[in-house]
Length: 306
Image 1 (cartoon, one colour):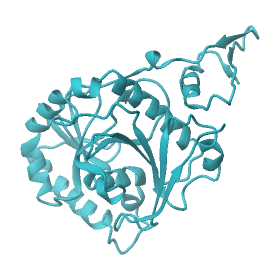
Image 2 (image 1 turned 180 degrees about the vertical axis):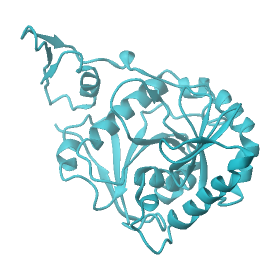
Image 3 (image 1 turned 120 degrees about the horizontal axis):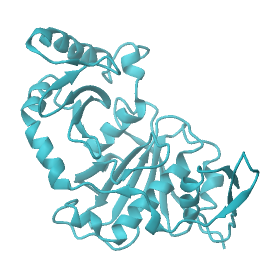
C-alpha cells in the first residue's frame, strides 16, 4: 500500500487486525520528492485514544439533572444526554438528533448551526422545537419523508440500542452501556460505537450503522483494537467504568449491527482476512427498527484462515 505522506497512521494501526496469513507492506510517499519510506505496523502502545474519568462525567450529568428532568417531561423515553469526550458540556439529543447544549453557565437550543441562547423570551421557540421533534421524529410518524425523521439515522439506532441492549444480545448488562469510549484523536470516524459488558463480565464492542458502508468493518476492528488496548491495561476499572463488575481478561467481543439489508456486499470478504482473535457476531435488524428493534439475522463469524 502506498499512501501520501502523513496519512498512513490509521492504516498502519489497523494492520494489527489482519490475519497473519495476510502480508501487507505499507509505505508513505512524498509527492514533492517522489521518495517513499516504509511504515512499520503500529503496535497497541501507539494507539491514540483515551478514557475520560467516569466520575467527572457523572458530575456533569448531575449538574445538568434539573434541565434534563424538565425536558424529559415532554418525551421521557426519547431524550438522552450525550457527554462530548474531553468537554465540559452536554449535548442533548432527541432520538439521537442533537437539539440542545447544556453548559454550566448557559443553555443553547436549535438544530445544526442554528443555535440560540435559551432565555425566558425564547421559551416559546424552545417549546415549539420540542413539539416538532415529537411530531416528526416519532417512530409512528405518518410521513417518513420530513428532514427531522430522516436525520441522523445511525444515532437514532444508537439511542434505541443503548436504552435496551438486551434487544440485540440478552447477555448484555443493561446497566452499563457507554458511547464513544474510548475517545479518538485520529481518524475520520463518524461512527456510532457503544461499549458494554455481559452479565459475566465480558467486554463487548457494538458497532452500529444504519446505511451501507464499505468502510464500516475496518472501522469496527480499528475501534476493537483500541478497546482491547485499554482493557489489557485495566484502564476501564481504573477510570470508573463498569463499577462493581469484575471484567473478564479475554479480548472483547465485537458485534456488527445494522439493518439486515444494509451490510455492504464486501463485508464477507473483509471478515475472512481478519485476525482470528477477534470474536465477531453479525446482527441484522428489521428494516423497521425505528418502531422497534427486532433481530432477524444472527451470524457468528469465524475469521480464522489457516
